[in-house]
Length: 304
Image: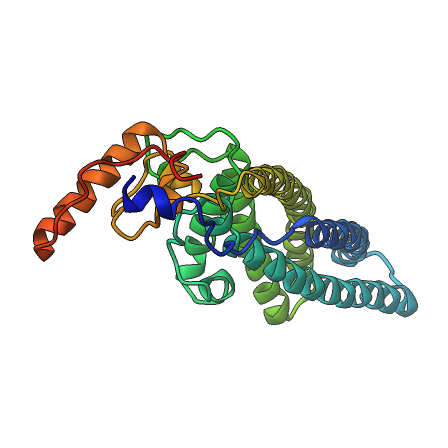
């Protein structure tokens, strides 16, 4: 019996388990629902202001109290939108960061971008037009139950839902920014009427964005929890068999670059083709260092 067979009997220290995502996902969905309701209230306020401005432009009499009431209604809904939006942003970032950091724990694949970008990428100009979407793509891929093993992790297909969500997010942001700028520059009733109309479109698109974002959170969270349960079940089964956790899933699929750093316990969970590649890699490493390469790769069951 060789050294590999002996080492495979001792399980290595457990890897960090995937962090749960369900509770955070529920909080994000609840806040997005609240945001949608506030945006709907803002639509009512926009329509009220458009009506008042339209009557003024047509020369109709509008009482001072009615004009003030319309302005106050829009101001209150605007404040509610700011508060709700801040709450959504905070909880979204917490959820998004946890989902992103779970990628290696679920798949064994390394992160494409540094951990800090899970939050920072949303606030860096220009970069925030594409980097968060790239990270969201990886988050979606990590929950894949039956991935296409013929292609690298970062080329796995993602749902069109993510493309729609990102497109709506970008367009809504541009429209909202334009409406805010127009509102602050408005000097006449006609200017204010134009700003109110653009705000109306911004709030309507905000509702669409809230709905699409809810779908994204629900889908990703559900995929993650199913994947997390599968990983936990596999780890539990290996622990009961005295094999340790075994290699990451991307190694089991043969999606690897360097197998020389794997432990013998990792090798125990490989398929035959991957074990052979590991043995060849070890032989090459042994020749480079002037050591004798292993004569034979034992069956993972030896010594157990």
